[in-house]
Image (cartoon, rainbow, N blue to C red; front, top):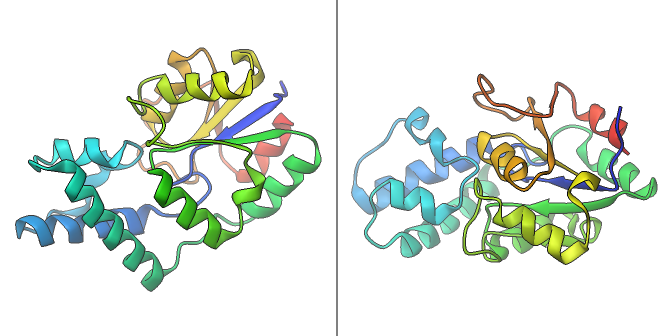
Amino acid sequence: MKTYRHLVFDIDGTIIDSAKINMLSLQETVKELRGDVMPLEDLYFSFGIPGVRAMEILGFPEPEKAVQVWIRNYSACAERLGMPLFPGMREILERLRERGASLGIITSKLREEYDEHFEKQGLLELFPCVVTASDTPKGKPYPDPMLEYLRRTGAAPEEVLYFGDTAYDMDCARSAGVDHALVLWGCLSPEGIEATYRLEKAEEILEFA
């Protein structure tokens, strides 16, 4: 198994088991702003892309304002239901750092969302380089977030492995020339998604450091 100097992670569906919170809070947002209740399965498309893009697809004329409503509903839903890490994830991340791996984040969350959610989880110190949707003009599936990570860290593409749970994550890494691992513990629809690796269990992450 190849090892990598930089192990970079998506958040939702990869580190945090947040699918239910994402979908319920988006459903609440659509109902609040438009009055209709969309089936949860019709909202799966939003998982892994920037919130503004999701709101554009949903047809909101002011997507930035709609995202702020979603952030509010997301926080309230997370407080109500909890926002757990996937089992064993904290220990895995700590062991990777002990082994000398450089850990990073590339997320479709805005910077304010990342700071709030990861501060509550006590994980901010684990990730010296974080690229959020606030940091690049284009988010996933475009390569811009990964290229920004490479620019900030000075890493070569072959030194980096990106872990994510959606086709958007895989496309972002592939377009930047970076290997990519699809994590099946958080993937809603894995069929047809191309990836360098497909991981069944979170413990498999340790094999790459």
